[in-house]
Length: 217
Image 1 (tube, one colour):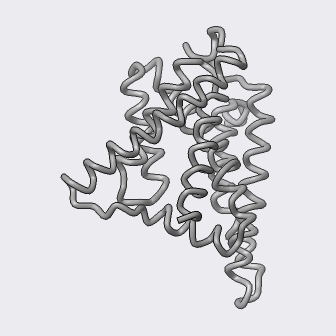
Image 2 (spheres, one colour):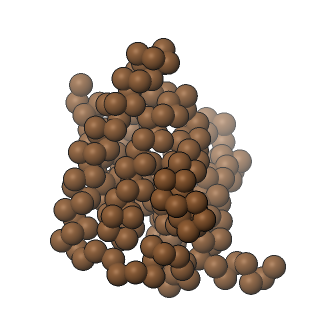
Image 3 (cartoon, one colour):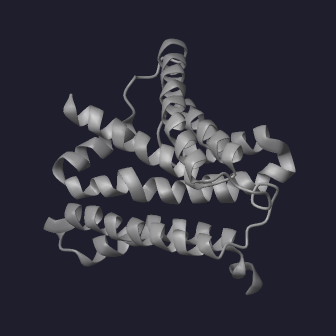
């Protein structure tokens, strides 16, 4: 049992899970009138800590699969595909939105996104979670760990489907296709460059752009 916690995959998932539940401790300790602030700043603390821990774990990663054993793309290639990835992610979002609204009858607005925008409008520091910390953790967990694990078992498509659906479900939103499509894009960027920094760049910039565009409306 002790040996299982030596694996980077297990440690990253554990950090991710703990980061989701740590704000509960802040809520439990805060007076009733400060529950909202405790939740917001507790999340900022736990997600920032979680992202930093994952970066440290990645530096001494024990993850071995067909993706990690091969050479990865250099910085210029990573940056290029990270920027291309933003366009791909937005295109996937537009297509997924059309299918969800026109064929499935879902509302165009994502409840998850609207909740985030409401929090950011009242607590601007929360933007660091949406734009940076959450994307970093999600890419390590859903792409490097989960997609990487299933890649050798099911192939690229199977691994993308599994990891993208889990990524979508974790957002607790009815727009499953929307989030899954982004998961597919980020999975492609990871396998294309074999460097987790690529989908992180695309994810960070996309989230930042989405929040900025909505707040400016």
